Image (cartoon, rainbow, N blue to C red; front, side):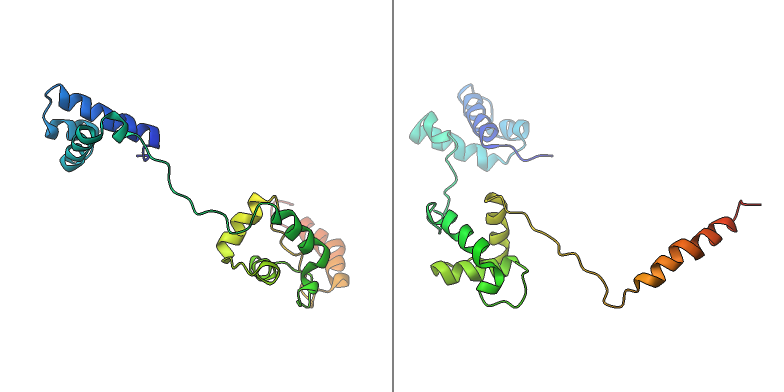
Length: 161
């Protein structure tokens, strides 16, 4: 079962209080709405003390962003221009931790890896998986297998009789 949204929760509270005003028992209301009797009791009490406005959904408090909005383009430009080597890394791979460290170097603001990932998505940066090849890879052997061995195996396989 999905969790109700803010509007659905508010509707449920208003409905519960309306039914209580009509004389429906709180236990019956709780059963109808799939909540505890204590919830219904609190909603009724809240409506009595603060009116219907007390049943409204309140916005979820959010932390203000650490980085000022105006600083974001400057930081992204610095990350692009300097690259990882500009921040002391020996290769050109950006990781969420490296970007978080670079932002801390530029602004003294610390971010965790998981939050950095969310910020990068919000800023339109996507993660890139570096293309890696085994250092032991033998291109000549692979070509020989593809051109000589595989066709022979394919011809002599089951169902070729």
